[in-house]
Length: 233
Image 1 (cartoon, rainbow, N blue to C red):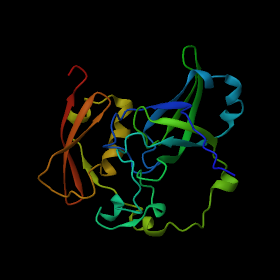
Image 2 (cartoon, helix red, strand yellow; image 1 turned 180 degrees about the horizontal axis):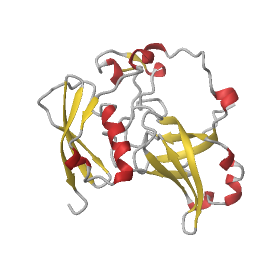
Image 3 (cartoon, helix red, strand yellow; image 1 turned 30 degrees about the horizontal axis):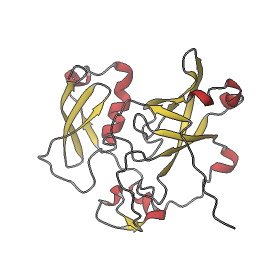
């Protein structure tokens, strides 16, 4: 019997406050204050497809690494939380560089609304996806079967409590809308830098909403240096 080839297509896309990969949380749930919306394609906006979903607190998103920039397969990768200089098997990591560029995220479903123009829209918390990421499926999270309290997390558990101390001058933080500040602080605490760079004199930056946020990191402390409005640039 010949191999059956099935093509999948996006059923929705994420609308989020981070337009690029830089600055994204490295796992879902690490920044609960980070909100995003799942906006469905027209053919999947039938309200009956969402019947019962409002009863679930969390959902799984199956999505595509649309900006990983690599097509070839590599058996090993360098996990960022191991400093970016130690190789592990790709199937022992959640690296975007996979045989099939699919991601899996557990997010909190905070709201299910029905927009007159967009149809059903899911508002989620804790997503680790950049704006425009294609969503291939949505499934409910089932606590009785999806939760494994005695599970072992391998090498990932060594860096479970990793976080930076953030020094964000009040006059700079006030430039960011009040309801978006906690999410930004959470993103900075997670250390957005590439794992292979540790230069205390280097100024890093990423886009958040309509702002370019610039910072330095030294000795476990992140200091925000600039928050520039780029909405008119």
